[in-house]
Image (cartoon, rainbow, N blue to C red; front, top):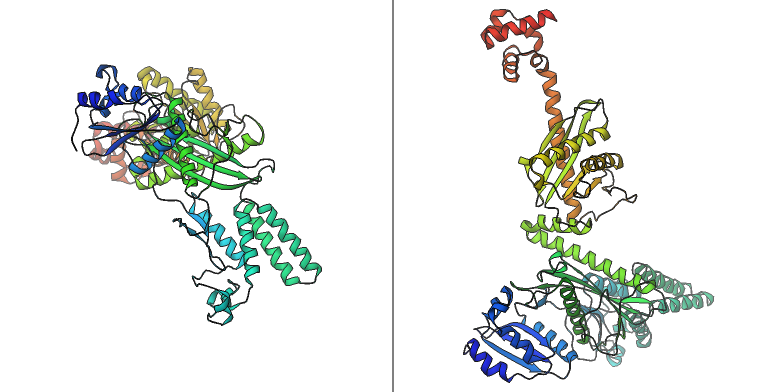
Length: 629
């Protein structure tokens, strides 16, 4: 393509831009769309990119340097601009826009337009008169629904083109599914088309959210069959209602007064939440029909490239609103592919961008009651989706696994800073002998063994884990405050229960550090996290990156402490008596033990024998010591 310089763009394009709402596209030298944006006033918005470079931030200057041409489309309203922008982003996948991370289509449940309809999942919509329900962000959930329908109604799975004439002529043979009771055999006339279609109507009702109505119908038919002494038929309806109940008891049945509501929630990685403009967002969508959640969808979105999606220094609030708007429009685009309309009532955690939704929709943030509970449930699902996505990302890229754990720790423990420096303490003694403690250090989610510390307990007599914990925490941070106060950790972990934590926290209070360093305890049995002043323990997901880092810290502190304790016990059992002699150190003691094999033989050795091993001075000290003893 012909590359236009900046002056040409100003003269030929910007000067001719209308002051109308529309969508603009920036193209690079290869003619590829690198950014799509919307504007209430095209002329003013696009002109702002080509202002005095000194007035632009570094991000915008970098983008402008790549622009070779500008295209635009005028639309009737701001709402149209939102929709067109979203469609163009989806079509062109520009580098600097918010994108759905997973570009594959989502599964639908199809009721085929045919005699004796089949019911199956598909990722392709065909305009052949078939009915499609969905989409489902979880293929597993969609498949479980279809499996339930086949179990309840024994639907056919074959692709035979069935008609009444061919069935009457006996053109078809029964298949294995019929013989094992998984199909009612419509191909051989074992079930009438009217009865089969009644089952299909029941499936449609369930997929439309009328599960409770279908359950009541099954129970009525069960009672009718039982009254007519048709016990096999009654048992069939009983099993169907039980199967449907079992499935929907796992889902949320909300208040019947809540009907036809779209619910959107969204969570962000800390980079977006703090306003940097780069990172990922995780959205969850519910649709509520007749008091039942009938559709659930979760999407991950992320900003691409080196710039934030709107290429300006947006505030955290503006970034969040923009991502929520994009999520809502993405969901509605997917639904519109199946000809479904948006609900008139929409619940959101905060308001999206102005003009994002149609004027006849009632969009609001619930503050109390059942609607708030519904929004909180959606947020919980968004959180689970985010955790799952981060775990999968960690598995794909092990190098990022630790940083993800640190980020999740900050979120899960509500810390003000990233816990890039964490320290964990553990006490170790056996029946009160050789009490010691260990302190292990993790930096950026990884062990920093050069910073490990071990402590002899000095001020505590006997096995008193609480007082020992106070001593080592006080000693560690009083010394660190003197030597390197800038290197205080962002999180302290105590291996132990409420008692150890309270004494460790008291040590921080006495040092005036309790507000500078968050501290938690981890109980050994249930992996529960304990916080000072909070009577309720915190339970994290067993597979969460956060808990895994804390457990690794705890296990490493325990290993390091046990190793130190064992070395002390071994030392005391062998060379301790010789090392207690003034002037006899560890090396000299080891020489005598290696030669004589035991302290008892050292005691019996003559002056000449001792002198031959380590010299006359050491030999005289040993003889004098044992003679005095």
